Length: 176
Image (cartoon, rainbow, N blue to C red; front, side, top):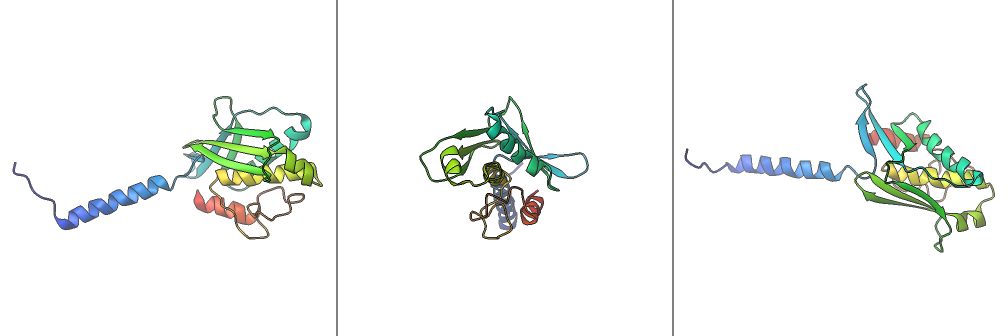
């Protein structure tokens, strides 16, 4: 069979399809893994290696996961000993309260700075919950914003805002 050179139109269509596939592949950030839940809806299941701190820290850390799981969004955070994602509380010399870092296609590190939280919190439990809910928002592909009613607002009142707000849930629903 003789070699046939592809037409310019066919080549440009193939190139466009490849570019779209590459963009789509890059558009799936870590570590939120989307799974079909059997109803045609996607869920974002995100596991975290079980953490173990004293009761002062455990209650607000666990409440952070529950506050996302209790929304009308596809978010679901759970503890799993097979997870490579971690949530670590320690005293860092940095000025931040919480820090999110993706570490692969399905892995994240959430760091909580006990030094700055102990220094600045007037309601310790709420402050910790707010910080962790915010960092978990990054795992759901949410970015910082300037909306006053958003857990992703860097200037929110961490002593009182402890749960994803309607805008945050809408953004997660729009993504998934």
